[in-house]
Length: 340
Ligand code: SAH
Image (tube, rainbow, N blue to C red; front, side, top):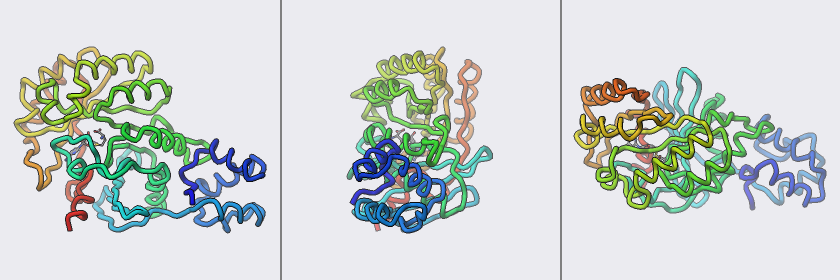
């Protein structure tokens, strides 16, 4: 049975017509699902019994199953079990500007970044669209909040699950549904160039963040294997095209790894690489994990790096820390469970 949360408004419309029903019923159903948030078809009281039966026969409304939840004042981290027993995470962060949810897009990840816990467990499969949508629905209901921002920075590489991710964005952006503004959605990628090109053609207002983490090929090859397929000079070239076409500002994520990518030389190289590009750099304190030998940069090293970028005209921020107490680095909670 198909899970109804995986269908865009257009897709559901088509299926409702195929069931021999009037197209406008779709809006009523969407309203029950996403505005009123019912959990059964029987609660859709303005639909005829006959249509409710048809819906019951065709679609499931099954939500995600929660296995664990860790909470701190500003962060709630969820571990979910999927129907095939695979596990994924989602992390809710309470910012002063709103509630931001970090969504997983795959079970595991094949990108193999050396510092990342998610990639230690290889990709098992891509997430279905409904499994992404339901991360939002579950957590909004559980915490009784509205999520105002979504970042695709959980487990997985969003551009390795391109079609389902685009459908997910369409569904959560739908004004008749969850109605999350495109400008409040951010896709983070390690730099899969053909998918960046495709994404650029979609003409969406969605933000793009690039996990850069190194200013030259030598170092980037060592910590991010994807760089061997799509080296920095090609990545920067497509990103310049992206900015020309979309007029949108890019984010570069840069994890601070002690004595690896946080030297003065690295900072200067980064300045050269990004000069003139409409972007800002987000320096990310590394969440250490027991399985990986990288250490987080000391505060001094982060501040020196920051100063060099700033003095050289690169817009830069240091990411506020959320969840290291609750194992918030992507993949840490899941990997903890898989090991038990
Ligand atoms: N695959 C995508 C999105 C998921 S990772 C990407 O590469 O962008 C989201 C971000 O978290 C990436 O920038 C990633 O490099 C970073 N990250 C991974 N492990 C981390 C850790 N232990 N501490 C801090 N950031 C981490």
